[in-house]
Image (tube, rainbow over all chains, first blue to last red):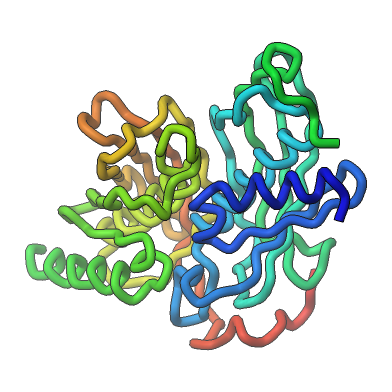
Length: 146
Length: 159
């Protein structure tokens, strides 16, 4: 495991809520794929069953935050300003993946798009667009992970 | 109408107990009236998003707002229908105070034939000093044609 992959693992393991959801992450260079293995406690609608929409939103938020930390290196954990979540398909009882694309990072604001999918990358189940408050690494101590 | 509200309150309670995620987070419906719901998530160390400050993860507030908006939509309908979140927009105004329970109050302000529109705020002390605000749209009758357990099967045509 590369040094940055280990740092990412440590970052996620430090966050109790990431452990509660069971979020993991795979790293290919500076591109991260967040992985949410299916677990019964993630179900919102027990009849279908379907993963809770809030869980998918939270998972994509976390993907955006982790991708920002990896790519930009943050003096402080970035803060969410706003998110807009689109639900495209029902979240089936399967492993969910998410990838974030950083559209722009300014001095204070980062714009990030995230997509989540299950069996088919080209059939996303949800998407998120968000604004995040960032503190660039050169204003703090920590360096980018990659 | 009040009989209908009693039924809706039972549905809300069942939605908190029967939904594994709502139960895992400890969701509780504090009050339910016509088109309005107030929910609570108790503070819990396992839900912390920032270990340095002990602030609850934004994702917990996201799930609380989604769930609360859904219950407000249910409470605005004349009869029970399955609903699904179409769209959820959340503004995070400030960090919740560590150690405090978080509440959400949602109001379904419009129901059309297919869609319910809901607004909500999340707060720890005062609804006028919110932690977050949300706008949501729900598709009504979302499970039409989908049988219980339908999500175990792959969709017919993945398009």
